[in-house]
Length: 332
Length: 279
Image (cartoon, rainbow over all chains, first blue to last red; front, top):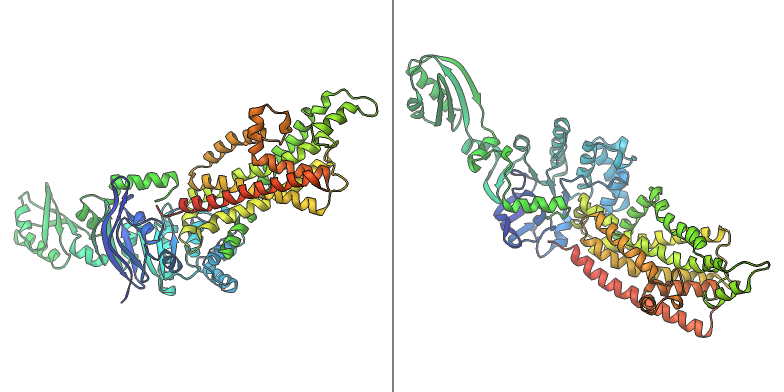
């Protein structure tokens, strides 16, 4: 596979010395769905802004579609699509007009633009509403319109910045389906940021977790979960003996917490650790009264690599700058 | 760049046409000035009327108001200028809105010229200004004791009127666009507009001739581009056919407005493009 996005030591420093993105490197292959995960203000949007030519790069290099973002911004702009986290459809235009305007800004011929607009509107179920003013759309409809307006010029790479932020669960689920469908159907490379880890888990070919401007870990979700994440077995046993040290000596067990007869056993993998734990308990002559397994998730991976949960939403000083700038409407 | 400018200009015009409230709001002030101020503060109304018309009144109009048949005719030229200048103050409004809503980033991430973003708003504002000016001219014509064109007023004079308004508009549009490019809030434009609007009007020949002003104010009014445009339009409306000294005054004023428009355009493009650069 050929890399279509490459970041080498990408760094963004806001004056005087606020580091929003710190020496970030990754490579994304053509056709991949790459998830850039992290809490609010981790540096996700700043990274997207650098790669989409909206923000200058302080240090390092970004290559998109073979073009250096810093040296050939116009070439990069021709091959990318951007769907930001804000609702940026024009409320004063109809759905169709929004799409046609987007197409014309990318010099798509009128005939092609209309044809593509009809296909895309149908794809996201907006064909009936295409003649209505976008201002009358619901939030979910606006997001869908926004998504397809980023696709109307058939970009090679689509940047989606928190595409489902603020949407209800049903609409979010539908959006992920559209994104997946579009990626497969249009063979578009998708770079998406989100802080919904479970959704990224099911959609992305590969993910990178960014926190405080630095990539903590990256790889396919299944690999990250098996390498870094942990499965937790919660068991309740008979008898009052302390089994912590015995359980800790079992292969694959990394941590054991005890509360009376209840044990929370953290394991690297499920198989064969699970069997080994039950063998250990059986060998000790203990009867398992209740058992529940919590499978490894990206949330756990995040917790492990950052020491925090995504829900902590801790913002570093650089991120605070980013968020303030966004609140001011400047973006960054 | 032309195609992108055209598309973005159409976007702005479509939204304007679909918002009659904006059209109404932008016309209210100049029309009220024309009708209320034009009647309430009409200097010739201070002269007692006599049957068959007071010769003193005609003399005032002849000597002070450049031979204008009535004060509303004199004021109409000023109000046309006031209209395009106050409209220019809001021309960058859509840009500020686009920035705060995130739409500007969408435009900046597209392969379009930065100048197209500002130029499109500028062109649509000029067109809006022309439409509003025509409406204002019609209002001035139909109100009692209103605008009276000279018998020599023709198509060329009408063209000259709109040329002067366009040059004035271009200059102020770029000046305010430079502010809009940096502004993050609509309130900034409102504050600047309300602060500068009336001083620009009073320190010009829009309401009264410069000759009637104290020296210091006349000095400001003489360099105010609003005065130059208002004077050109007055000469064209009141005198129709131009010749001799009047012709050279009008030519000078046109050159003055041209330099004002070109300088503001050059500066405006430079500053606006810098304002829309990557941070």
